[in-house]
Image 1 (tube, protein in one colour):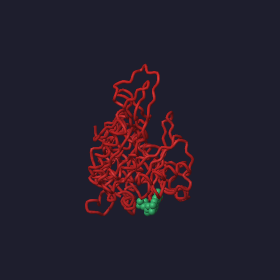
Image 2 (cartoon, rainbow, N blue to C red):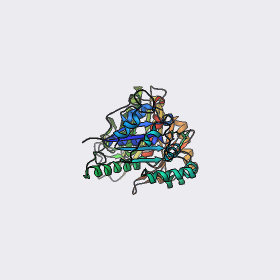
Image 3 (cartoon, rainbow, N blue to C red):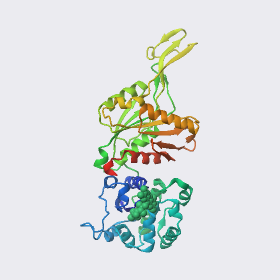
Image 4 (spheres, helix red, strand yellow):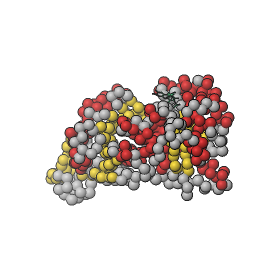
Length: 435
Ligand SMILES: Cc1cc2nc3c(=O)[nH]c(=O)nc-3n(C[C@H](O)[C@H](O)[C@H](O)COP(=O)(O)O)c2cc1C
């Protein structure tokens, strides 16, 4: 089955980083992606990221040697053209038929036989400006598909730049448009290889990203009582595992240190496992002592206490001292001992003294002040570079929703879901040369 060909136009918005996720997902969904980026877009994300994700050199300059006929060739090559994020500048110029750079000329070379999708991203004032509104209308009337998140943009109030439709929604619309177009061309509903194709991990890795080694912890510790019983928590490990998967897909070199019994993944090549607090602590020491890691994302749910001793009908035991404590005991007391905070020691464990620490803090029904205090405490004790905060009220197990805040000493980025957190974290970890 041949791959679907997507011409991906990227223009200069703060939302370019989000669009990187769309490129990655398209590749996973069996699409060939050719990125054409404006010089402004390349100020927000770098060639290394775009080439790493798409596996093809980025085209930007219309007059570069070898590029001079690209606007014609690329438009003939593509099954679909997607502009994401599309700036006000791009949209307004496109509506006026201006062709003063490669992406505008590509738009002018569009033959309207294949889908052309535009995902705008701009702040409220630019979006509601009469010129932009008129341009959006003009483009819609031409038959351009607008992947608009108008209500989202209007609702963002003073949030500022860059409300792009969520990457998953852009992906969905793109795959649907590809499928529809292929079906129309062949009369067959299954003509396209994209959309229906299972997601696979992209094989291309950017050398810049592959040099970045990230250690991600996930899941909950289990504190042994005897050889068959433990004290544990309800962490599934989903957050850490999803972050590890996303970073691996992006091309980072990831080690996932996950709890036995946490959610499984076959999308992370290098996995290690832990059970108890002690085993997690020891593994972290060994891994970080290697000096290999530049970042650690510590999402594991670590027990604050381990079992010190168990008193059964007046007799005292250490964990493991008895294989299985009798089920018939009348009186039992479990004595706990306080564990140290692993997160506070990561920098001591690390050979790389420039290690970037991304810590997690879960609070329970905390007030705004309590949340701030809890996060500040973690910044101080762990010398964390970032803290991902979530409160139990941010998690809805029934609706399967989970909100986070990615906090640095300078700013707080609200993340409505795990995918958004993953893409924000990717920005944090991206090497400078890829920006
Ligand atoms: C930090 C920053 C963020 C910006 N974000 C946006 C944006 O989200 N949408 C937009 O239309 N313009 C945005 N701009 C302005 C564009 O980058 C600018 O209009 C540029 O000329 C667009 O060029 P292009 O359309 O050729 O990519 C931003 C500028 C800066 C400095």
